[in-house]
Length: 442
Image (cartoon, rainbow, N blue to C red; front, side, top):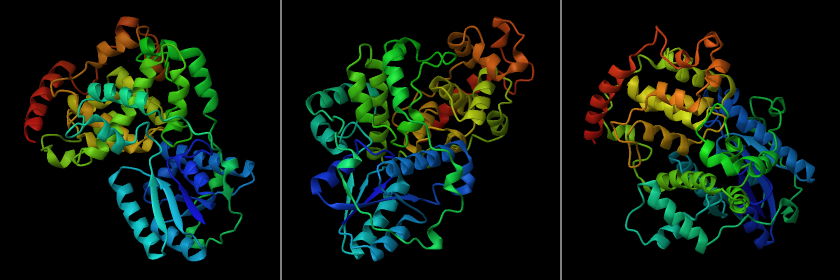
């Protein structure tokens, strides 16, 4: 008997783990663990936590529609695994790899539990287009890529020679056990999963985007007022849709290069998290003592007096969504103009973003803060006013989220308000001086 543990793979087709189980021709129990650490601090009520739990509901429903059971337990992963291995005759535990420090430590503990019970513990790569170890061998490079452009070229070459197509093995072809598990009270969640509606299906979004939008994505992707994005990210981060399926289907469409480039960028951040030993500790490597949090509250409440910043934060707080261009503007404004540590913004986005992903969120914040191997130069401080006028020329986005400004002219609406908490020109100059010192402190 095999035990398959769902993680960032909340779907029932095109999973590397399903291919593995199918090849083994073994009976399997399927489990999802609601980890208290990842839901701590009331996160189940925040956008990111609700998105996760809605996808859990959807996954449970998908299993039931196929006549199968997905076992769900709430608790420390190693305690849950210890209990189920005591109850069931399981010879192997199968899961997909994750690359955060917490995930690595969690899997170390799970491996110890499996070893103690005489069960194998197998980790597979599912949520990247490339297998990182094979890619490293293919590049022949000493060290790792710190810049995206050469990584992207080699990524395309690698996939051309070693395709990673979507799998044709759905859950219907697996031998799932019907054996019941009697979960004690301590493994019951402290909230009702039934209170969360099942997440929407991602397939219609993908089909619409490929048919109607992908050809223009390269030219329109930064124009957040019309938001030409696919809307798939809240599903992608939880593996409700496979990156292999996205890549395969997009490759058949004309003009898909820029969208596929975004898939490569996602792999790049995951690759960085694996090979850059400082990826999760740059805030300890640099001297950030010159920064402070005096303006943090005004930023996250959308009360800075800079219209595009306030509009984007209000949208985030209300909906959990924020266009990528706006994430760059908001993050760089907080870290540079307001001279606030990037970790505060990173942690805030962790709770608020529907499509929160630890590794990608962190990579974006470090880029904006000019910290780490792959980052903007310290003197890069984008002007939110000129960016607002460029990508929302009519001010439609600002009027939607800042209705108090709806009567202003196109020229006026992008400008800082009289009560703006910083002067953009002076704060830019101060940021360059401060971050020059921070970068040199490494």
